[in-house]
Structures are given as structure tokens and as C-alpha cells.
Image 1 (cartoon, each protein chain N blue to C red):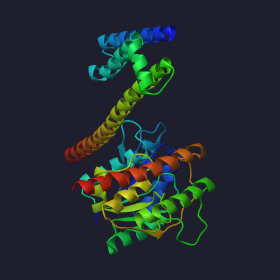
Image 2: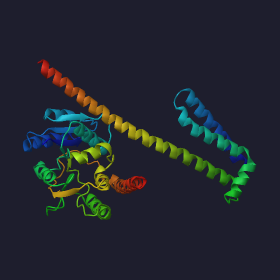
Image 3: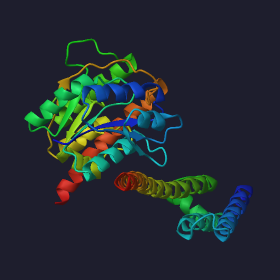
Image 4: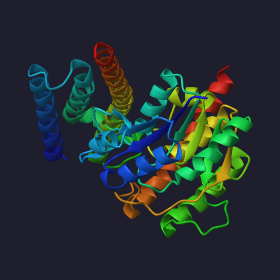
Length: 121
Length: 236
């Protein structure tokens, strides 16, 4: 169990560092980094507090505390993925509406230019 | 009467030329707008060479996004009627007049060209045939009537339906969900018999592998549409 907790602690620290580096290089926007940083902090806290983990495993009716940790990891990532799925859906809708608007504006500009050339000729 | 013929196209260079020529022979005074979904072949050049107007998407949007862009433009330009014809040559332009006649003489907001009403054995593969049969069964209780060819893309719209679809149109595999959108808005639609032909070129966007995804996606989309509109009605 100790080894698994250490691996999770290292993983969560690595995740937090990766997010901070991405933030610094502007590869990720602040509002989208919050979910990942919160997930990393939660995982680190759980892996370092065996009392909390034991309480959590009793709460979930599990005899094995590491299993409770893995379930928490799974739940945290599900929440983060759900949040990003809604964000991607919103962005896709906005992107399609924008692309349609660009196409229609291009069409109208071409029509205007053709009309102007015809009137000049 | 202001009518526009809308032809959504994605990599249809093989068939599009003959489709446009046939459309212009059948209805010489009606403008043809090809909505190009960012094709990688010479679809745009073929369309322009054949005398069609072209609305070019800046990147690939999929069928629903591409068709909706055409509807939006038609609505902005003040067209009263729009008939959508696929760019693969499956839809016979001779039936446009019949679709238009029904649109003008009835209170229907949308008319669907159906391959299952003229007594012929329609040209379609067995996977699509089975899918159409399943969708027909699923839609009957939702729409309150049987739509024999719910996947048909050969449709005519009045400006009233154009206004709705300009604001809200399903983005992937739109035909079936569009029926639910109209039904929920209490709009009327009906089918008229049409002949469908084998495609003249290009490839269908719905391959055998995608069929299962298509069925699941459409069913989910239909039920989401029902829930969405029921929710709005409750909140009023």
C-alpha cells in the first residue's frame, strides 16, 4: 500500500508541475488549469493522509484502502473529463456558427465586388 | 415566387457537374447554390464552371453544418422556398416541380421526396434499408404518423421552416432529427413520391462501418430533441 501511495503522490506532483509549466508557456488557459490543479492537489492530499484514506474506504464499504484511492482517482478524472466535454461541445457549436458566418460574409463580399465591377464596366 | 436550389457537396467532383447541368435544364431560371463543405477535390471549380453560385465553408463542418449555412444564407437573402438536392446525382430534378407544387398548394412547411411511395423497388443497400425501417418504427409514435423515407435528403422548405432551421438544425445526420424539430414546433410536413437513382460518383458519408454509430447517434439525437423541447414547454 505504501508503494502505491508514493506512486500516486509522485504522479500528482508531476501532474501539477506539468500543468504549471503549460500555464507558464500559455499552452493551457488558466480557467482550464483549475480542474487539473484541484485534481492533483486532491490526489496528493489523499495519498499523504492515510487516516483520510481509511475513513474514505470505510465510508465506501471497502476493505482495501488503496481501492478507495483508485476509485477516487477514477471519479476525479471522470469529473474533469465531463467538464472538458461540455467545454468542447460549446466550442464546437461556436466554431460551426462562426464558420457559417464567415462563409456567408465571404459570399456577400464576393457578390458586392462582382456587382461593383459590373457597374464600373 | 423566389426559389433556391441548394446542393450540399463534399468531394463530389465526379457527379456534381451533371447534377447542376440537369438542374439548370429542368429549372433554367432558378438559381443553384452549391454549399461546399471544404472539399479537397475540384468540387468548387466544377460548380462554378457549370454556372452555380458557391458558398464555401472555411473548414469541414459535416452535412448538418453545411446545409444549415445554406439555409441561413437563403433566409437572409429572402427566398420563399428552398429545395435541397444532393450533389451525388441520386435525386431526380424532375420531381422538384412536384415538391414545389405541394409546398405552394398546401399548408405544409416541409415536403420530403420519398423513394417508398411510388411503388418502385427503391435503390438502396440492405443496411440502409434496415435502418430506414427501424427509424420508421421509432418515429411513428413520436411524429404521430408514418414517414416512409425519414432519411431522404430530397426536401423542399417554405420560409417558415427555413426560419426555424436557420436557428436550430441538427449538425450530424440531420434529416431524421429535423423532422422531430419541426414536429415539436407544430409545423407540418408530408411526403411525395420520388424516384431515387444510384449515385453517379463520390462516396456516401454513411459507410457500412459507420451505420451502427449512425443508428445510435440518430436515436440519441431524437430523444434529446424531445427532452429539450419538452423541458422548454414545461418552463413556460
